Length: 137
Image (cartoon, rainbow, N blue to C red; front, side, top):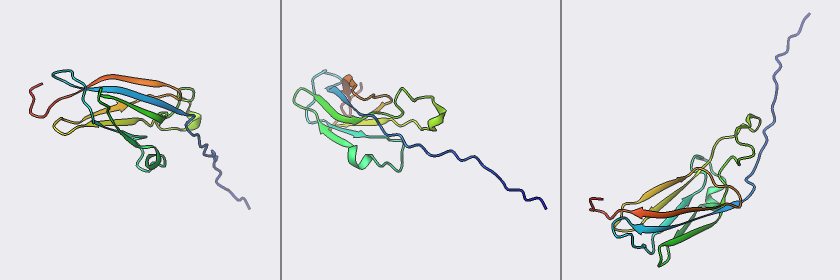
């Protein structure tokens, strides 16, 4: 009697976690006058691609611009995967990025995708322009 048993190769799941945090900063200005805009709401969505996001409830954050239109988001988890494992199929990873939404009453909101942020990096978005509602710009 011959007994045939199906065999399969099991590959263990390897959980890797972000190595660290970065910083995102910028300045929000009016598109027409180029004047800085204060009290603009800056909302950061961590790992926007993940519908089940174990980090989102902890690390999503909102800040407002200061009187000079400047904002700083500190302690932002790095995007995934980090550069040193990107492209390595062994880790079977999915790309996770961040999204920033910028909004102020009387202006059209703007969304910016953050495709890459490494641990220890300071990402300066520079001047970000918002268009007034009803403007032709």
